[in-house]
Image (cartoon, rainbow, N blue to C red; front, side, top):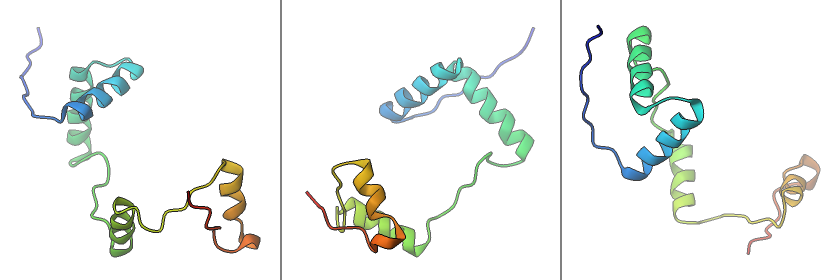
Length: 96
């Protein structure tokens, strides 16, 4: 008979729901997913993914995105891809 411990954690309800939907798609219960995470932490002797602070350029881009500054909008993926090609120069300003 295996022993088990109970873990209690406070988690944002939206994050919990999103994560549990992913677990369901993977055929895992929340308990199984948490056990997997703990096993990976033990095996890796740390978090099983990189945890880094964003650099200055990324922080600035995040701040601009949150403030909705310098955003471009496109009517289609084709327009976006055309604006991102080297021969077209910088992305066109087709903001809506």
